[in-house]
Amino acid sequence: MAFAFGERSIKNLTGVNADLVRVAHKALALSQIDFAVIEGLRTKARQAELMAAGASKTMNSRHITGHAIDVAPIIGGKIRWDWPLFDELAKAFKLAAKEENVPIVCGADWKKFPDGPHFELDRRKYP
Image (cartoon, rainbow, N blue to C red; front, side, top):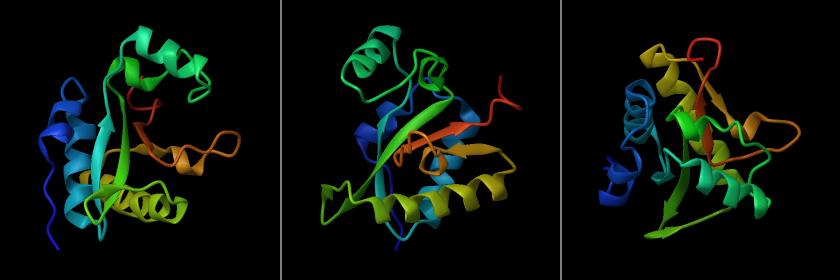
């Protein structure tokens, strides 16, 4: 099934590094699950809000520089937060990144603070 980003996702990709935008579009084309981009470029003030709420552990977020996005699966027209869905999205993102030759880091792979919705460009290539 072919999915397309909605207006919200397109808006949330504004200011995000073009390579990550390309990977996100490719991941959507490869994914068996529809998803939305729920957050891209963030202000420092927004990042501070997320830290205060416990939703982030750093003020050094890749979102602040446009090198990260958060996505959420859409099932039956509604955003879902079931962890197995994020594992499926990670597969699509990893394949898309490989095909586009863009190194990414998947938050779902983090050991200390797994973050299923989070995908960022690898700092080694994108400092």
